[in-house]
Length: 582
Image (cartoon, rainbow, N blue to C red; front, side, top):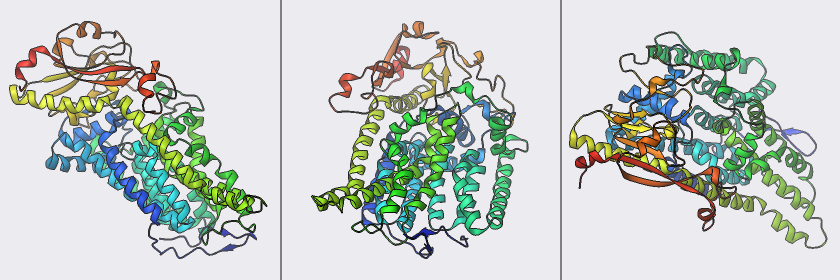
C-alpha cells in the first residue's frame, strides 16, 4: 500500500516536483555498504560481550520468557494477573529462538545465540533504513548515517537488548524505511503494531508520519488503515495474553492506564532532572546529539544557499527542509521524555536511528553552507571548499574514535558480571555432575540487578537467592510452578515496598556473588568472614571514586591509572571443594 501523494520536494523557487518512482530498489552506495558490514560485525560482537545494562531487561523479559519455555525464572509484580502490564506475546519470538538454540548449542549458550539472532534482524532493518535514505536523500547522507549507526555506543547496546524500547527502535528503522519510500500505509500499520504489541508510548514517534499521511493522502484512508491495524493487532494480543493471564486483558492498555489514566507512581523507581537525556545522550551518541540538534538551523540555511553559484550540487530530489520534517519525531520524542520526572536510559533508544539521520543531515547541510560561502572567497576559496566538503567524513571519524572509547570504557568498567555468570554456569554444571540433582543456592545481595538471567543456571534445582543487604524495594520472586502465569503470586506489591519473604538463611548459600565495594550491610559482614574459595575475581569500576571523563571514556594508559576499581567475585563454599574436578 502506498500513499496516493508524497511529501513534496522543494525547488529553489518554492515549487515542487514529483519524487522518484517508489518501486525502485536502490543498492547501497559503496561507503554505506562497507559500513553495513562493519555494523553487522559490531552487532554480533555486542551480542557476545555486552552485559545487561538494565535490570528490567532481565526480570521483565528474559526471566518470564525463560519460565514459559524452560520452566523456571523470576517474576515481577507487573506479571501478576492483578496488573498484567507486560505482554507474553512480546516474549514469544525470543522464547522460540532461545528454545531452538538450546537444542542446538546448549542452555547457557542459547542466551548469546538469541541475542545474535536479534543482532542479525537489527542489521537487516538498519540496512533497509539506510537504503531508503539513499533513495530519498542521496548516497552521501546514507553513507554517513550508516557509519554513525555502526559506531554509536547507544546502538551497540540497544540493538541487542531484549527490551520494548529496543524492539521499538528497530521498528522505527522499518517504519522510516517504508515512509522514505513513500509506502505510508504500510508504515502506519507497522507503527500501530509497535504500539499495540511492543510499547504503547512508541506511537509518539509516529505522530509526524500520521500528520504527513493525512496531509498528503487525505484524512480518511490513513485513519481507516490505523483503525483496522489497531483492531487486528489488539485482537492478536488479547487472544494470546488472555490465555496466559487467565482473564481478558490487553497489556498495552493496562500499561497506558497505569501510567496515564491512573497516574501510576513511576516516580517510585527514581526521578531525574530535565537535562538527564542531554548528558546520557552525549554518552550514548557522543557528538551526534548536538549535531543532530543543529539540523533545524543548518537545514534551512543549506536550502537557502543550495543554489548559490559554486555550491555543491545535490542528488535529484534532495531537500533539507523535508529532512528536517522526517527527523522531527526524534526532537518530539526527546522533548516529551525530558519533561516527565521518571527517566531511564533505555527510553531514548527509539529515537536513536532518526537522531543518526539528523546528525548525518546536519553534517552535510553544514558542509554545504560553508562550502557555498568559501566558494566566493577570492583567496584560498578553492582550498577551503575542498576542506569543508570533507566535514561529514571528519565528523564520522571523530564520532567513531569517541564511540570506541566509550564502548571500551563500559566493557572494561562494567563487564565483570558476564564473566562471573559464565563461570558460574560451568561451576554449577560440574557440581551437578558430581553430586547429582540437589538444591543449590547462589546467593546475592545488592548486586541482584546485574543478574545475567537464568540461562546461567543449569536447571530448576539451582536458585538465585537473596540475602539481606540493607534497605531496598520490592525484589523479583521466583515464578511459582503451581500457580503458573495465571495464579496471583503472594507477597507482591506495586508500591516498591520491601518483601521480607524474599530472603533466605545465609547458611544455605553454596555460592556467593559479591562486589566488595564497602564493608557491606545486613548478612554480608558475617557471611564474608566464613570460609570461601574465590572461583573468579574481576575488576569493576567504582564510579563514586572515579572522575569524569576517565570513567566515561577509555583512554589507554590513563583511564586505568585515574579510575578506581574494586573486586567483583564469585565465591564457593570450601566444603564444596571435594566435588570439583581436579
